Image 1: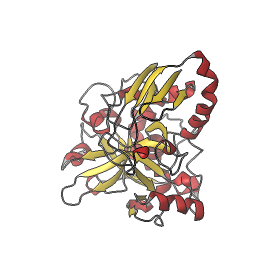
Image 2: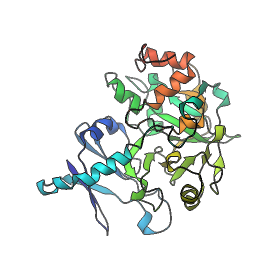
Image 3: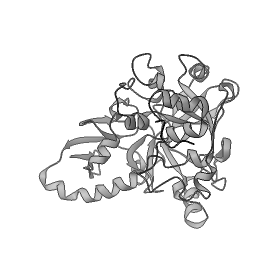
Image 4: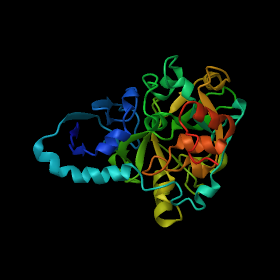
Length: 330
């Protein structure tokens, strides 16, 4: 057990004591030091990931502050109940169908031509470029220190394989940006801003950027449309009001710190078919993108999308042992 103490004028302690949380976060030691201020528990070691440049608002109170770790004393063990409750919030409230209307019946995914990728589409990490030996360009792209070992347990490989939502593609230069949909920071929105207090804060990528939200609501002032019924950005106060006074559900919002970025020609190169292909481009339903697939009892998002896309994508999952032949796919 460890205590995480905020540095600066205000101090607060929190404890990560839930063994299951530590297990779910194993392999996070591969993350580079380029994301939101948070301490990740990984395989018995502490990995501190810091940044002070990505924040929302102008007041000092709203800026993320760095954290340090120290061994917890015996007297603090009784205080873990509060953090256990926090962890139950961080792990999610349930499946993706909550607040989504039709639920799983509306989920779909299809493989795209690599030249057709645009904002709102999804990139599934190709396991050939993330496991074993070889170039680590794709790993560095999303903020990983290197490839994963081939003997990493199946469940951890699936949780660590990136699933990226493309949020911007420049039509002329083909520069692009996106966010990692499934990597949680271990923090809640309420740790940093006065909106959506219990919603998890996700790691968007290694490139510095302000806090961003993705949702399905055109009613949120200032939001911009993506492909397939998704919207990005918007006014946080307006979003909160739409949830409290309108028809919105807080479970349909995803919040990201930082992003993944491709310069001109880089995304096309990583999508190029062949032995160096890093990503499998898909177009998916909004419900599928917004599903809380890392909640307890839910299947990893990589598997969900691969099975729905079928064909080549499903076969890659089978070939790399990510999907079993009897995994329930029909």
